[in-house]
Image 1 (cartoon, rainbow, N blue to C red):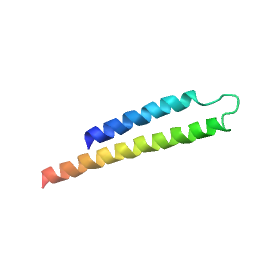
Image 2: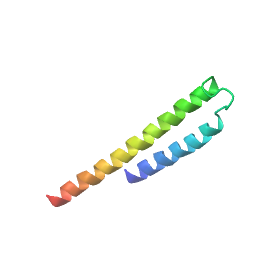
Image 3: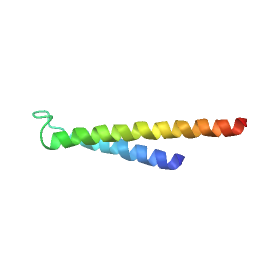
Image 4: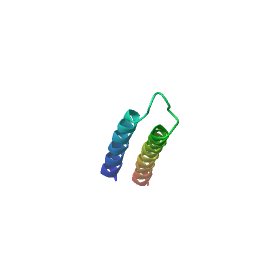
Amino acid sequence: MKLFTIIVTIISIVLIGYNITQISLDAPFEGQSAVAFITIFASLCAIVLLQILRLSKKVDQKLKNNN
């Protein structure tokens, strides 16, 4: 599970980097730039969700070790 979260996080970071280059400064909320912003936001959401998953697995493991 840890390897999966690391791989997906890296993919999300790469997608964010690529989509930052796709944003047009002349019209940032039109056409291809809007799609880039949506993809950046979705990638950030994926990173946050994966970190929540990782933390919940750590808490679950600690609870099992205490019992």
